[in-house]
Length: 238
Image (cartoon, rainbow, N blue to C red):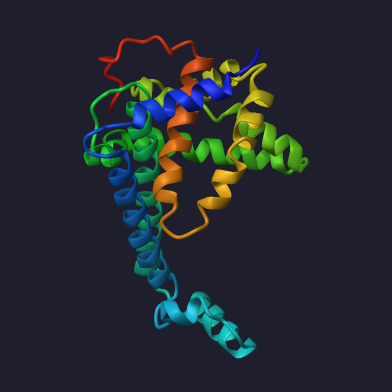
């Protein structure tokens, strides 16, 4: 079984072309929202420490001050708010996955899709937590089993988006079944984006690279599950 990587990538580029609103504008909104949430979470975890101090540690005294701020200053409310911010980041990321799945299917979608995951908050949260626990458990054996587990359950979030009423356990089980025989292909598919991942480290270049990568991955999900020929009007949103 082989993923037609070039074809899936070409289809992703074609699906992104000429959309309204532009895929790049939606990606920009996604990146800005994540950046704001990240800054907010950082300030909650390190009260009294400026962002400039946090990202320009030069002396041991500065490092000790930052660590002390993290260990002693944040109160219960700060901790709870920090966790809430992390959950928001998680849901916005799933929303972007949902958006790129719409793009791959040529379904109309815009900025509001970034918040679609909040409509199925508890199932998606349970799914992400269970996935993380499973991958962590396998990683305790060795790095390679952990990587294999990550690919084994990599389709679960798409399955949950396609069928919001399905339980997280069923999504994980279906992902395990669907990826049987495809994990190496998915790994090679990810590896083919290595240059794009490196470019994403450049500020704001990720506005161009991320939607392309995510849309191509949505195509890979559709190819593996036999959903490439689904009619464009299929409504999978939550």
